Length: 296
Image (cartoon, rainbow, N blue to C red):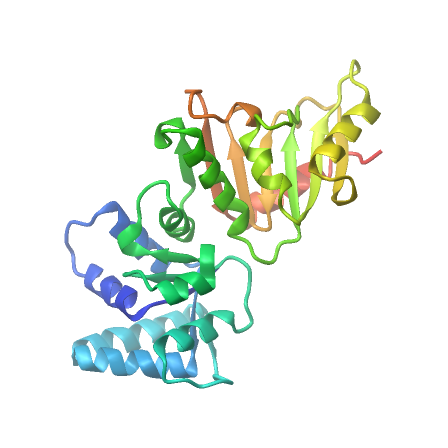
């Protein structure tokens, strides 16, 4: 993942390096900045802007910043480039930095709300002061921290809140053109909040499901393709019960796992949890499992 961090986020992080009691949000921020799977992105003009900012804060902060950049370079965690379009406007500098060679699962983190950047980057922005489980800011920060993100029925007071949260998940990706789903049953319909938030996506949908001797394969394929869209949907089957009881969704390197049938993910049900993580290993295991399904 890639991060463009605001000046105040970096300042907050440097202050967190001093031993003290930390909130859960502060712990997540520190984990985000120090996560080896996250690369910090700097354009030449943004780097110059930040150096001037920390110099104004005092030489010790400038030392913190320069040491931080040097350490990240050593760890191969810096993406740096010379700005093609230079600007004196902080917002434009940040947006240009973010958009340069944009990779999927890239995010901007700020301490305070910046409406111009928020409008420009949409679901790829996190405002630290707004972090509250299970909102967008919390979700982005939690994903970036590198931990497995989890929510359950207790985090949502009504169906609208749950639907809004599920709708955030596919929008974290801006480049993935395909969503893959492993589900034994594929109980489709308006009652399935998960699928309702996926079917409106323009992405292709690859479905992997089990087939029993009592089921009609052609009919099951037809119903799934009609639900998600005939032209963008493919369906593969397996009769191996050892591999078909998973309930997982993959969107690029983001893997989402469900502990209950997807049609039963509702606030009124008290027996489900959703786990998600951007993870190379989980992605590889997902791919290995789907290879065991047959498209015929």
